[in-house]
Length: 133
View 1 (cartoon, rainbow, N blue to C red):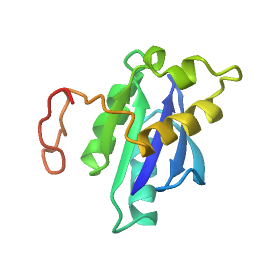
View 2: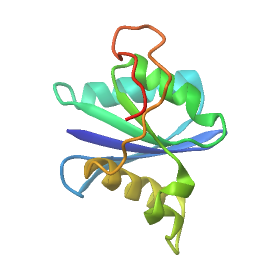
View 3: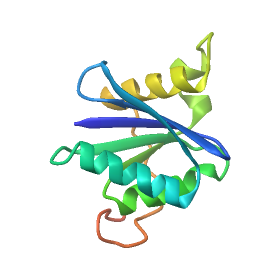
View 4: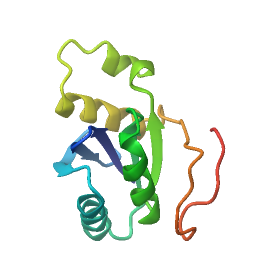
């Protein structure tokens, strides 16, 4: 399974990619804009074809909504994490986007991120409606 965590900001996203281990498979920065997010999703799906890909992003303001919807439309199951409730990030002494996204990928990999969005895929082709989980 491929686990992607994305630290979301108004203009920029920082992603960390991990597999079933703590080994960092990749890190990528991309603009928080529709075309850039679509391009990121396509690259991830192409690179990890045949594997289950899921993501987690911080529910920061409204910045996560577009990212969430586009990832779901590309069949990437996307969870939400409330930054203040993720103790490992909130208590980190050296919090930056790279450290935060790496820690969040580990939390996803270990099944410690379970918050689901009430949003659904806008195309309806990949993600069933889901409630809190």
